[in-house]
Length: 204
Length: 75
Image (cartoon, rainbow over all chains, first blue to last red):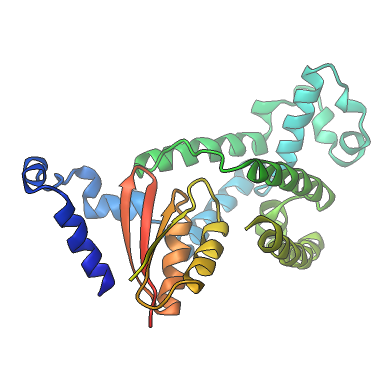
């Protein structure tokens, strides 16, 4: 009832002449039901899961490896470090754990993970533009920035120790029967429970 | 009947939902809470919570990618 009252009050606050001049907002192609269902409203979890599964099968068929995100982010960081004058090629991580990094000719365009990461960014931009929801968001506070930076560092470190993130370990690791996915699953629940408590206690 | 505005612009999930739950707890039944959000996930989880908790609500798109959820605290 209070909601209905509020609407009446809001309508009354607009002078009749102004309201008449503006008229009702004209419906555009963006308001079309099919367009909204496909490109504005979120898809159901089941739809998303089926599409992701099909895409991962296609990715394995095309590249021989399942979807992962953070290993390529480590490559990006190492390439930037190299461009700044560092020598990441001798690091034990790349020499022993990810020898692909030191293979001749290996770069942004020959790493499937780097290409899918660029695809995520391009796809997210396209989706938000098509939905008419693009906006530059402001930083809320210094506390928000420092929490984001600290959280990013912790997640980056964790993803290297765990050989992946939710994508490489859960989405790709579990279906390929890898034990590390199950260890990650238990660990991330414990980490998320602890992180949520910290969030509520110190951040909100 | 009081009306309170909660500025959650620039905040990502689950922060808007938790702040909304805290703000509603401090209101009296029938009071309105206007939650300003620009994170599309909050458009899903705040209404889902309001449905479960029995509060009536209404979503208005105030700008591209920016919304106001008006929640009326249930009796």
